[in-house]
Length: 206
Image 1: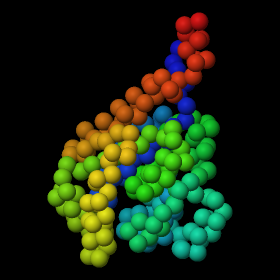
Image 2: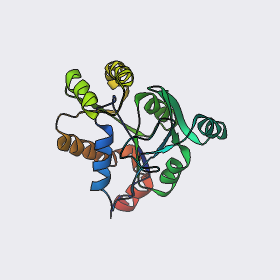
Image 3: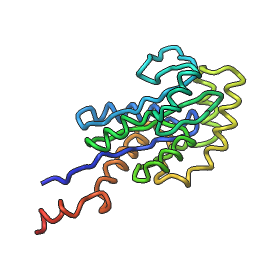
Image 4: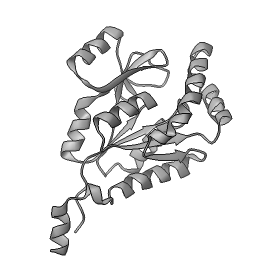
């Protein structure tokens, strides 16, 4: 018999440009039949070219965001790089209740708040191979103004020092290798003794 896998929240965080979004999307493509889901955050920033409402984010204005905060709709919310971001609570609760894996692609502030609210969540920090590589990635994206880029660079440098606050750390030098490591962490976490119920083991050993 196979052991029941409880619903799990998986936090994937990194400095801006570290690769958390690319890793999250590749993991979802690898697990289309395993009840894996992606937590779509709300944000007050403008939609970028190539983005789609309800796929990368739900794009809202400040008033709508504040209304959602007051309703208690977010499991966490914070201001990052001049804009506000929030993780909707209901999808997280649904996965915990019904099973599956919910991937959260969030910044370090949001990661800390989710971990505080859901201590059982698995937190994984993605590091770039170097500061220079990170800055090159940010510049190459071409999605920010020079002012926004400077803010992201400065914040990213500070955020890299926060890796010890996570359960696991993965260096994203080669994307495919990093994705496989994160997949192994999530798979292996299900084999920990603290996530398996005694009732399940008793059925096996009597």
